[in-house]
Image (cartoon, rainbow, N blue to C red; front, side, top):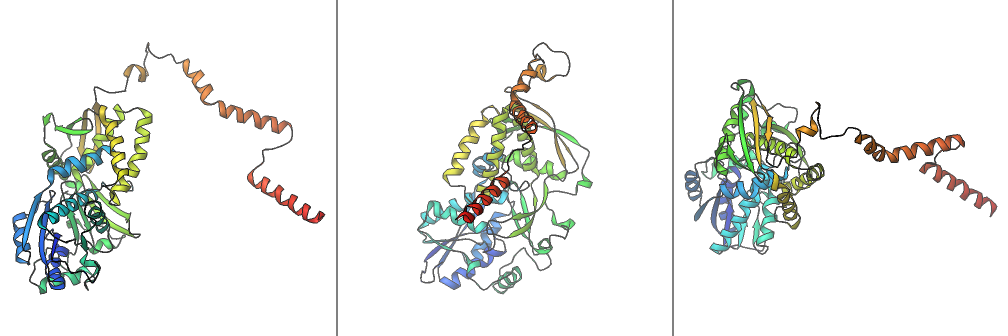
Length: 431
């Protein structure tokens, strides 16, 4: 924030964690402003009334607790699931999807209470600062933005813990376990502490959503039903979006499914190491991909895989509210019209594997695919197809034969460049 600006009222995106716990007293001390806390419930499982009380005790003049679980699943998780978006092949974008939703609601509250600034507790090294602030720009570009981590003298988690303790604010982090965690309905992320050494294995007690796969119960089957690419039922029972994900998180957690240890490329230019737990999300991702393999034609399926890479990059970079993301979502939605059906999955120790899939829009034909006798496919047709498909290769082969007989060979770019150099030298000599 520019030094000459003195906001009178700030709406802070408040989680009750270490950074935002420090932010309320710091904002009041630094700017002398009124601080309104906005707590977003995206399924993190916190005691939100306790979080509200903590914010008030820390100096907030008011606290808004917003239940955003349903829009988080229907408006962010499901469209990203339909896109098949995975960042760098591993990260299912749990934090990335949640931030634009939280920031937009924060802006709406700021406008409703007449605030002239918004604030967040993101560090200056992370991706989340970008995700929050791009959303602010998309909906309220005139609001001032305060990012305490870019202004205060706190330079480490240890400093932040000391600051909070000095101001009587209890925090969940300790010097023994200084992890930075973010949890919502889709995942739980872990960063910091021993994880900052990419050679160090995650401690056994790090994981909170998934148990050790070695302790998993006997394998079990489950079925997920989809309508137009959206999961709607579990084992044949219609289930609401939030309830479905909660149930799958419990099931996946029992089997240790969805653990990812990733060194990723942050948007701000550095590499970071994070450990993610996404049990229910992993199950849905596997199921959705399997159903698409049945219901989408080859060209659409392959092109959609390219779209998924760009979609994941946009979401990771905080560009949810952009024309390109919206256009890609429109394309993805059009591909999902036939992604209706059921997928049967086998859950075992750390594994989720599809063992069956069916759809009324299936493009799979057993009569065509069978290795047994059939009456619908004339195998002699393939000879003509291969002759035409391989025609360019045959033409190239004939040309090589002709050149070999003539004692010549095709010129390469190096040959051409060399010839031009010789000609140039000859001209210079003649002159």
